[in-house]
Amino acid sequence: MSLNNLLSLDARLSEAIRLKNPETNRFKPFAAFFAHSGDSWFIEIALFIAWLCTRSSLHQMIALMAGAVVVLALLVLAIKFTIRRQRPAGDWGAIYRNTDPHSFPSGHAARTAMLAVLALGLGFHWLGIILLIWMLLVSLARVWMGVHYLSDIIAGIVLGAAFGVFMIFTAPWFYALLPWVFSDRSSLIAIK
Image 1: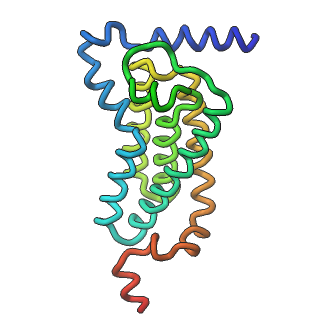
Image 2: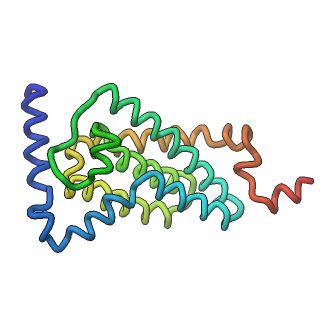
Image 3: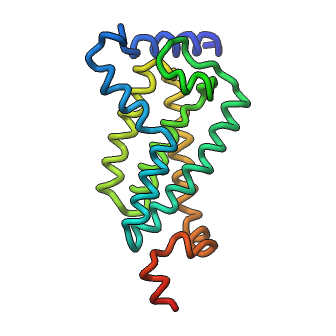
C-alpha cells in the first residue's frame, strides 16, 4: 500500500469518526470540553496548582510532569514544522487552526499519553488509570471535532508514551540537578 493510499484511508477513517452536524450534535459540548482539556496551558496551570498543594514524591512527579510538558511541546512543534501536514478542513478550533496549522503529530495526544505513562511508571497507578481514560477522551475528541486525523493521534500517543518512558529513566538526574524544584518546602527546611 502506497503512502497516498494510507493517507486516503486515514482521511476516510477520520471523517467516519468525526461528529456529524457539530452545530446541532448533542455530544459537541462533551467533545469540545475534552478537545480543549488537553491544551498545554490548562495542563500547566493545573500542574502548578497541584505542585503548590502537594508534598513528597507526588510533588516531585508533578514538577517533572510540568517540565516534561514544556519539552515535549517543543519536540512536537519541531516535528510538526518539519512534516507540515495540514489539519483536516473544518471550522471548529480556530485557535488551533490559526496558531498551529499543522496536525502531525497531535500534541494533545502526546501530552496526555506522556502524563499517563509518568504517573503509572512512577508508581501513582490510581492517577495513571485516570489519566489513561482522559488521554483516550482527549484523543478521540480531537478527531471528533475535526482538528486531527486518526494517524495524528496514534503518532502523538506513541511519541508521548516514549517520551514518558524517557522521562522516567532520566528523572533521578533531573531531581539531582534541580533539587529546589523537585523538593517540597518542608524537606528543604529539614535539610537546613
